[in-house]
Image (cartoon, rainbow, N blue to C red; front, side, top):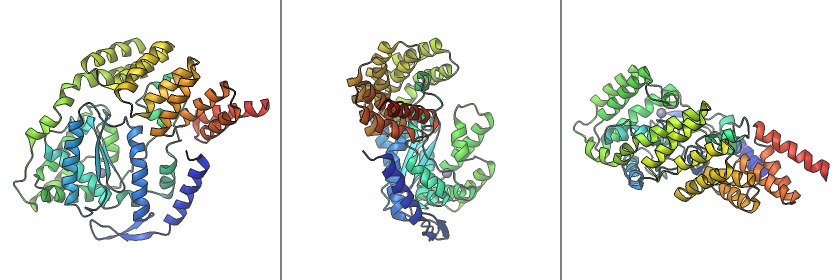
Length: 428
Ligand SMILES: [Zn+2]
């Protein structure tokens, strides 16, 4: 495991060299643009951050693996005809109800299941993915990143935006416990560029560019009504407007007509998501009820969701959160057991079960689970509770090291870790 100090200095050195990069050619438009980081640094940043960003946003959607294959196939088809076909493109579907999509440098792209259910056909999906491919291919994030953001991207893993370490905080999709993910905010110019070149890639890959027109129209409609929860995230990073619709209509005039939309294939690909729409709706409502402190109501809703889709680990993790909130730690532990069983590839399931095990004074299990969570995502919470576990077992030196790591995260968890370090020092 890399210590926090090593990470910090590595990142600081990285930023210092990157300032020397300056002006580069935009690989998509051929125009000059300012960049803080080199292509190599960009690629390694994307490579490093991609799994972390996924963890922080619910992890991969696992109920229907064929949907992952489908989205990746459509993405790779577009990537091959892009201006940077050599980038190590990857496309994943995240288990997240918020309608959103994002790209990290190097072509590391994600789309939430919450966005997929709003689309009607493959051409609309191609419009989303084509747009994100341009952000990566045109190195938009490299130019959007300020020095602070580049620095922040390296440290985000520990920067839990934590208010409190009470069990109420367990009620989240893991994002609170895992810190906030870095997602670039692009300028309007970058958005228009992504729309325009994304449509070119669509046409080149055989898709009907009208899919991009329909997509923008849909976003404008949705932004008017705001009927769908969580759209703010998408619209903050990609503000919809009638002028973007009009621009897309203009671009489509110069592109090949008669491309495919593959409505049937798309509907088939999202059929499991559509069948589970009610289950996820109950889950989202349970989260909302929990945030309003209506814990019993939330429990009823999430148990309904479990019956509708028993394979979804998130439904059992939330049940665990709610039971832990009610201080029913043994039952919470059982719920987390099922979450871990159903999806062992998410840090928060291990972290939460470890926290509850520590509460139940089962320090051996707590140590194992908290360490397991660190394999997926390095969090201040895991370090803080590992500190507690080692302290209880009399291993003061290791406890101190973990508190020290947690203390550098910022927020309340860091203050708590500092207080523990002080306690250990005074005692020693
Ligand atoms: Zn965009």
